[in-house]
Length: 205
Ligand SMILES: [Zn+2]
Ligand SMILES: [Zn+2]
Image 1 (cartoon, protein in one colour):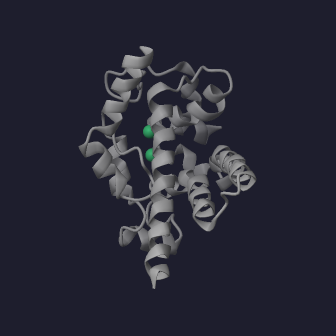
Image 2 (cartoon, rainbow, N blue to C red):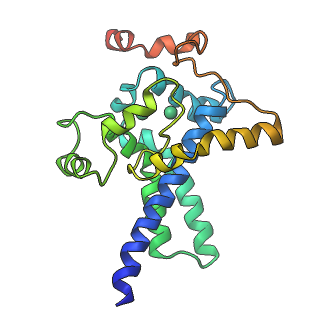
Image 3 (cartoon, rainbow, N blue to C red):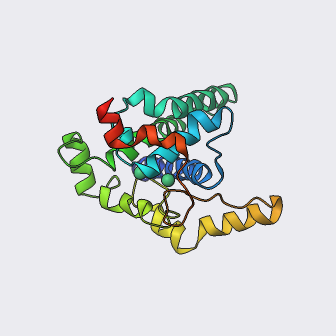
């Protein structure tokens, strides 16, 4: 009998844990990521900056190009969990959902006919995040709704000002302030390298 409760609870907990970790990574990239940094700057932060300026640009990327960094992280964590004897189905589900966080994010930008039917259906019954919900992350000042998989965590985290409190902790302990988001009105000039991603420039290429 307990299995009937343990399995659904395990699924919800694994998905929400993946959603929270992916949201935390998204917040770190948006808040502190340096697009001119050596490795992470070019390969991880820049695509994020491009996304804030030109949100539909990443829809042209295939699954691997959008997900390689998360897949790599999931494989490393999976190997560590296996070595420690902690690899169970809940951990596998956590890693699988987390590795696909960017795919969920892309579905949050697709119009209904662009997304697979099953995805559009799951969005319509609010099992996975809808484009309308994710659009709030892209509304100035673009500092809320960092989670992109379901619609469960964002209202909770934003209501208790979780991300602002975290930023305060970072400021108090390290002195580091959040960077300006140049895609936000008044956020400073757009970096010159972003011009190459402007939609009309790409279509002319
Ligand atoms: Zn963002
Ligand atoms: Zn987005």
